[in-house]
Length: 148
Image 1: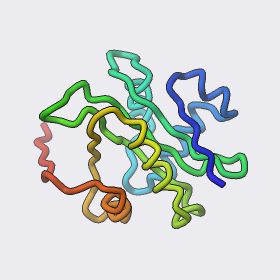
Image 2: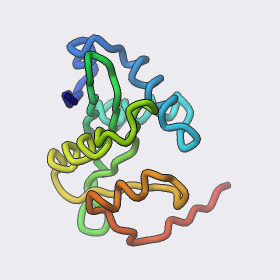
Image 3: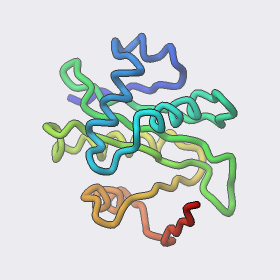
Image 4: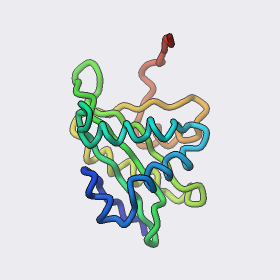
């Protein structure tokens, strides 16, 4: 049975008996080839904790049999009308627990908690793209980037 815990502030990690580092390591490992560096994941958590000018958000921890099996980070964008108010930045499920519906449960909980619209970025070849579509996400725009 999956239990989904909400993390809104740094101290919430203590209640879950996992450290922030454990959470970051989990995301880093289980995002596989779609991951960012740990420093970027930490910045994302800081943003959710409203540090360094961050606008807030929350994390979810999926716990099964006392172990972290899923993680999600949702950040507020501070915008509305032209850009959704929330961005689902990271969602990962332990590789041995995929296909059991845990990712869907965690995403649904995050969407239920979100105030306003939610966007996410997903690479076209990411297998999770099908899950996002099944829970109601639609492709609206192609993202383009200019790197200096």
